[in-house]
Image 1 (spheres, rainbow, N blue to C red):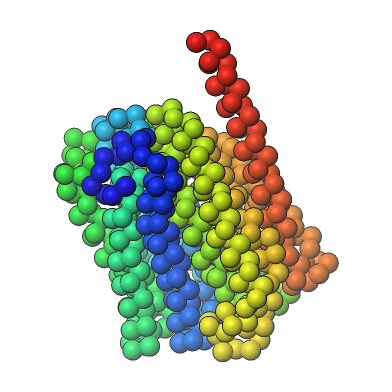
Image 2 (image 1 turned 90 degrees about the vertical axis):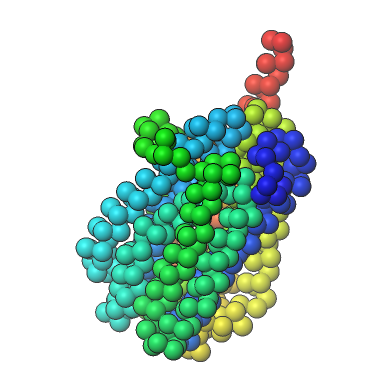
Length: 456
């Protein structure tokens, strides 16, 4: 599907063809975005130092909360928009667009403002030490000031993709990332602005991406665009956005809690450099996880449209292709982590201790990484068809039910290796739970179809 085609083609074209055309732009955008974070960390590690890497890792819980509130609105709005398109309801699709704008602005000002006021206390609670706090503070001050820009950019870009413009959504991400990769070394190495320069590069690049997205929605020739007649919040749409967006929100909020526990565990058993090693490992593994997420983003409008149009065979076929593709991607991550962990860690830092800690962490934490792709796709499948409760359960089970208990038990037995081992253990259990949930859903769906046929 090209960006000039009607959204109705989602219900008629080959599922495999649609998945490739929708997923590739999303994968490119997500991969480039993840590569930016990796390159940014490399710039910080090589240009500022190993302790700055640890300071950046301390900010991960707060960054997860930033993303959580953004996804609450952006992903919820994108899913609802694609379902409305499947129902040929352009008015409510347009209303959803305006509701996303207002909710992004409200949530960003509230969250960003409160976080700035209590920033030092938050970072100390998240695992910062006297040595890493200055780096974490400098980075997050800039990021939090820019939350309205980031929320609007990410939220509207999700809606753009789900309403029939995957290539444009890809280019908006590419524009932002390319600008960031250009600006970050200039701000860090030339202007000597340190870790604050990396954050400023992020903010400026997101502003550039936002301009691109706003130009799209200001164009009345596009399927869904700004229309002042619908420029107000509507309770039913807000409720549906939150109900769908609650799953990714809780997933990121739980990630915040988990990373806090992880950071504190690493501080206890390995100190600041162990926290930095987790930061490096997290950046690397997120590259493969983001590719899998790109596949789910490509699936979302296809599944949402066909589910809204009651074409269930196309829904299930899209799901099958997505699981296979995502599993291949995360399996590649597993192979990389087992074969070349030391060269990968060396990209981020010249500190031998940090390299050794990171390489060991990559090997252990990736033991079940090949299963992550399927778990991600299945969880997002339930989100895409509006089954919020199941999606929330699958999102929370890995982190709350499986990972946190592992983090509380294994480190006491195996020390720092126990912290790393908690990750693959919870991944494996969460995968099999997701498979069970999918099996139950498909079985019930077949029974419903059979009963409908008997009535007819």
